[in-house]
Image (tube, rainbow, N blue to C red):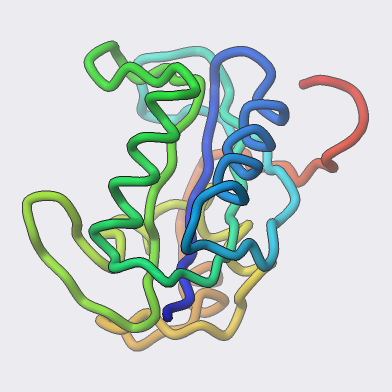
Length: 166
């Protein structure tokens, strides 16, 4: 059994609804127990070939699956919810396995921890909300420390799960 941190993102359609649909699908997955979900964050798409802003969040699950099995589940949920990985950078849903306990894995299917955690404000902001003191197993820094060091020009705004659509 492991503690897994999953990044959720969307920039097509209603981002909040897309993230909640994915979170609900995770709750239906045998071998997973949902523990917590950050607030949604509205994120400017800096450096991407799109004008659509993203909605991002991080969920924490208890997994009784191997990391590769969990990654397969995430890819299947993406497909079920309309993600087409062959078309550009816009997506209805994007699910990234950020951490699985303190495991370090590098395979064709999976790299853990996610290689871009420390550079992504849109990942670190919600990650700090749910696990500020979790230590990155390679960088030996907490999520909070990485967030304090990040130099990003991107705008990231915390929202609520209810309210006006953005």
